[in-house]
Amino acid sequence: PPVRLSYRELADEARAVARALVAAGVAPGDRVSIWAPNIWEWPVTQLGIHLAGAVLVPLNTRYKGHEAAYILERSGAKVLFTVEGFLSNDYVTMIGEHDLPDLEQIVVLRGEVPAGAHSCEAFLAATDGRTGELDAEVDRRIAELRPDDLSDLLFTSGTTGAPKGVMCTHGQTV
Image (tube, rainbow, N blue to C red; front, side, top):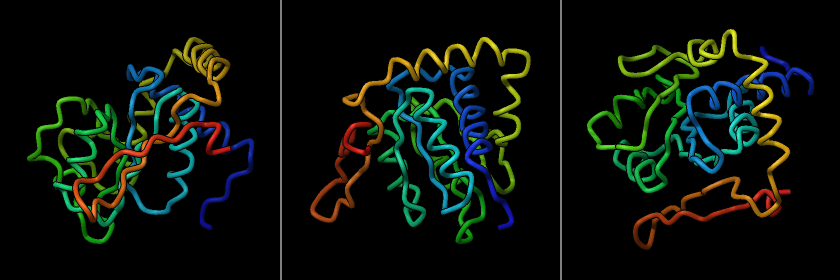
């Protein structure tokens, strides 16, 4: 509570995220990051990323700005889904001073939306009028996914050096 989703609703919400990612120019294999706590939008976004054929790059909510920026830069993440105000952190501001040339969009799932970012509602609404075309593309991408395709890029803690990306495939996850 307060949000409960049936499996059908979960699938519909995830597909809406996938359509928005396709509309935003995210291609299969592109990296998309989530920097948010355990909220209902997290698994919806994760599934949407995978339906779009993209690769999830999760970020720990305890990261400082330079730690998150390092992973965003190393992974080449094109889109970041985040929140504002969790643990009194302004995540968008925390990475604002870092050069992240691949990061094209920041989507705020919850909280106040700072300059340079988009609300989740606005991001999802960018598909208006193109649902059929985008659904067809999402279906095509789903049909092309294979067990050896990359699904997640998980970074190590970096306790013995810089964090390193661990590549996981859909087959490994299943």
